[in-house]
Image: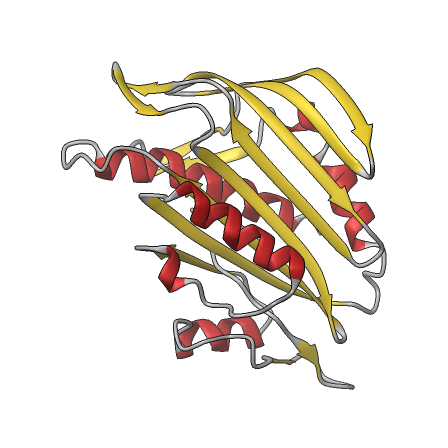
Length: 242
């Protein structure tokens, strides 16, 4: 397994009788030719962004728009996109499949995370426990305790919604997170967002990692590496299991 880099968005249509994807017009000029080529080959694209103005998809699709608006409202100092494209044929039950995978919260324990600092793999979460779960109006809400070093216990609210052709997931921290004694993330200021939608003959898997944290010069690199690489790892891990 190779180290995982960062995260972006994409849409695709499958050419009949080929394995190639043709990108639709929702991709804007922020997506590079290199990234477009990767998506056309069916690869995952991960992008680190300087601001929400660098989102590479422009669309009115409700779930993707919801994901982008949720990230914008956070006013993130750290931001990333992750994209995966899958054919619809053979993956008709994708929303149900990813819901079962990603809402199995105890399975988060042991997700492999590549540490750039130590140049080896660690567990992304050393522990993952459900405190409560309820479903109302098609939305499942879970309160969970996730333990992630070096931040310790993260009290987390997770919401999950699925239909026959969409899936939407948001994970939010409920407590203050510290790094080396410094308060770096206040409650509600770190989100992992996944939106999956059907577009033509394809599924678009779109992830956003967003963190509103102090942009301190002596902490920026460590926060970006520690938080954002973990969010990217999380999204990429579940995308690759589909």
